[in-house]
Amino acid sequence: MNRSLYCRKCGEASKKKGMHPEDKKMGWTGRWHYVSPVMPKGHGITLITGNDVSVLEGKGNREFIPMSSLYCDQCGEPITGDIALARTMWHYEDEPTPPLWENDYGNILPPQAVAVMDALTDGKNPSST
Image (tube, rainbow, N blue to C red; front, side, top):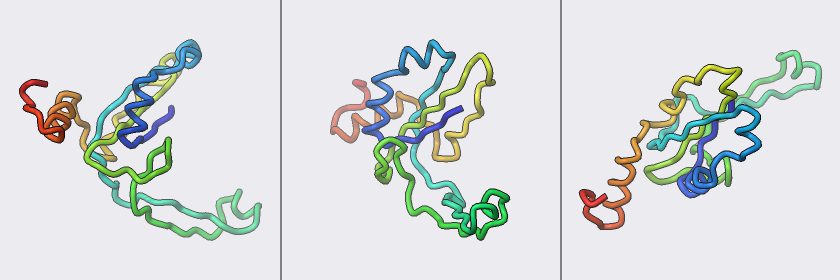
């Protein structure tokens, strides 16, 4: 399984591009969800330092560094704004459908809600979307 969180710009571009035909041929499938990005509790990086053997054995020194923001898995920039995109890919022949991890990173937004949010941002009447 592969899961990625994208800023709106990178997510929309990747979603529009679609899955590569070779990935489909190899049995990959996927889903996209719009999310309202929220930093999960305890989200950060654990650094493990020490000599090569201690690190490999899991006995190195551990230091947890909380992250200050969510970062786009494509461009590496902090995710700002009200909407991000989450992509999940898995081998449909070998793996069950993954659970909704996307909820850990914000509420899943239906595409209709995103269209209304965009219309309001653009100053348009949402009832015409």
